Structures are given as C-alpha cells and as structure tokens.
Image (cartoon, rainbow, N blue to C red; front, side, top):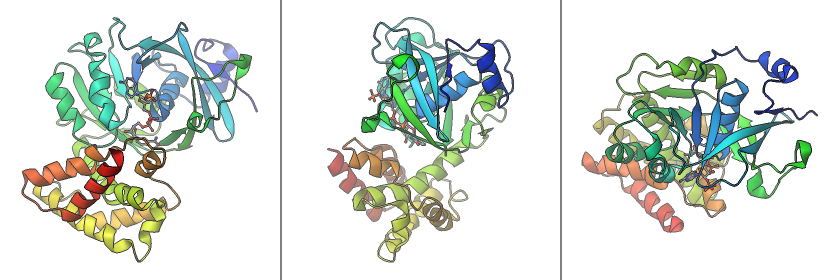
Amino acid sequence: MHFPVIGQELHSNELRQVYNHERMPLPVNSSHWHVLGAGAMGCLFASQLQQAGCPVTLVLRQTGAAATARVQLARNGDSLYFDTPVSCAAEKSTISHLLVTTKAQDVCVAVLSVAHRLSAQSQILLLSNGLGYARDLQERLPRPQYFYGTTTAGAYRIDDHGDIDPGPGGETPFRHIRHAGQGLTRIGQPGRAAPPDWFSQWSTAVQPSSWDPHIEQALWLKLAINCAINPLTALHRCSNGELAAPGMAPQVTGLCDEIVQVSEAAGYGGVTADLHARVSEVIEATASNRSSMLQDVLAGRQTEIQYITGHLLSVARAHGVDVPRNEALFRSILARDN
Ligand SMILES: NC(=O)c1ccc[n+]([C@@H]2O[C@H](COP(=O)([O-])OP(=O)(O)OC[C@H]3O[C@@H](n4cnc5c(N)ncnc54)[C@H](OP(=O)(O)O)[C@@H]3O)[C@@H](O)[C@H]2O)c1
C-alpha cells in the first residue's frame, strides 16, 4: 500500500507520474475553488479538484495555526493524503469560485458567513441535497452568480466512527473519508444552455460530470425520488431494499401518487411521468444502502427533511394539492429532529 501526499508536494515529478496518467493536464489559469462544507462530499470534490491540479481551499468556521488540513481519502483499498490549504470564513480574501457542500439546512448561514468575500463576479455552485434553500439564499444575497448541481457519487466520513489513522509523518488527518461510489454529477443554471468557462476544468477533475441545460428538472426528479424513499426508510429504520417488501411497497406507491400530482401541478409532469418505475429501480439498485436520512436519524443528527419533503409540501400548498401521506411522514421525521 502506498500513501502519496499531494497538495504542497504537488510539484514532485514522482507524484505527477502517479496522477497524470488518469487525468488530462489543465490550463495554467485554473479556477481557484473554495469549498464550504468540508465534510464527506466537500472533501471528496476538493481532493478530485486538487488531484487534477486546481487550486483548492477548504473554508472552515474556524482555523488553527496550520495553513493546511490533511484529508485522507480511502478508495479501492488504498489511501491518498491531501494537504489542503484552509481559510477561516471570516478572512477577507476574495472568493471567485465557491463550492457549497454543507447539509441543506446549513447552506444559508454558511454562505452568508463568507458574503463579504463574494462579488457580482463570484460563481457559487450549490451541491447540497434538497430544494428551497437556494431561493432563501438568493433573496438575501442576490449579487453572485448561482449554479446548481446534483450528484450520484457517494462518500462518507470514516472519522465519524472514530477511525483516525495517522498518515505519513504521523500527522493525524483533519478528515478521513471513504469514496464509496462513483456517480454522475450534473450541473446547470436555469435558462443557460452553454456551460461557463470553469466547467471544462471541473469536468476534467470530477468525472463524470455533465452540463445540464434543464437542471431544474434533474433537481426536481432527485427531490421526488428522495421524497418517496428517504423519509420512509428513516421512519422504519430500514434499508432501501426493505421498501420493496409487501408491507412497505403500498406506502411507497401512495407517496409516489401524491408526488406525481404535485409535480403535474408545478409543471414537472413530464419529469415524473414514470416516477413509480424509477423509484422501484432505485430501491432495487440500492437495496443494501441506508439512505442519508436514515443515517442522520441513527447518528442523532438533524435530517434534511425540511428541504426534501418540506419543499414538496410547500409546492403542494402553493398549488392547492392535498398530500396527506407525505405530510404525515414529514411530521413524524420532524418530531424526531426536534
Ligand atoms: N455523502 C454522500 O454520499 C452524498 C451524496 C449525494 C449528496 N449528498 C449531499 O451533499 C451534502 C453534504 O453531505 P455530506 O455527507 O458531505 O455532509 P457532511 O459530511 O455532514 O458535511 C457537511 C459539512 O458542512 C460543514 N458545515 C456546516 N455548516 C457550516 C458552516 N456554517 N461553515 C462551514 N462549514 C459548515 C460541516 O461541518 P461540521 O461537521 O463542523 O458541522 C460538515 O463538515 C448534503 O446535502 C447531502 O445530502 C451527500
């Protein structure tokens, strides 16, 4: 097993040989990404961008004396170490490209904590799950340019379980994460057909990524599928696959029926036309998985229910659609959150 460290040592020829065989060389004037939300996904994307040669800085609420934080990325039985520059949110330096990977309920507070570093030219890519937080944020901070994304890649924090493994030099990593699954990252901006300049670098680093001119539809479909699966698994503390059992499947169908009605009322009827089939496919394909909402419940963390089923309910209300099953589920999960 080898433990290459990249970041400060990026210019070593040996490390260039290790990494360049997988990646296309990037232009010298790479976008500098600040990553806000240095958890599982933030560290995964940060490491992929850094590995591809993009300047990356993790933005933390507070930083110590060290200028870098070590991220250990476990993948395919191997470990990679990234010494990544860190910046305290309160610092003054300008942020040109901001990747947001906090939980949905933390997006507003997190981005507002760096508002003084953002300008009308700043590009903000929101990759948190759920819907609704972007509207709140844009009302309070309309100047930057916002992009939206959704990913099927997966990662989780191993350090959550107390598994901290001193790396090269005996330095304890700030984060130890596992890249659990490859997946497609879709990015877009409503009304924009062509990607911005930074996207070609991004898609070289984060593979596979695609520019989606209809990102609203992709985000709605993800929300619809999440509404049908995540809260039920969290309520019953079951794996995704258990939702296919005879006692559970009718509950999934009932939720889907309501979600389709809301989608049609909101203009997303085409997106959810085959929702029942898509949800069944996801349940089957991820049968052994624990949904992120179940993981949050089991870990005693706040869930993202407000921005998943909560958003569905607010759209349903706006269009006068009755969704009693989703509403009851929402109340049950919210009661656990509080
Ligand atoms: N993990 C996955 O496989 C996966 C896949 C697809 C989508 N997603 C979505 O991606 C998002 C992030 O998920 P995750 O699993 O990466 O969550 P996570 O590991 O909990 O990471 C979130 C990070 O945000 C940080 N944070 C919260 N408020 C902050 C603030 N005000 N300033 C700076 N940092 C702040 C948290 O710091 P503290 O820990 O110090 O609070 C934490 O490190 C979620 O919306 C999730 O649904 C995750």
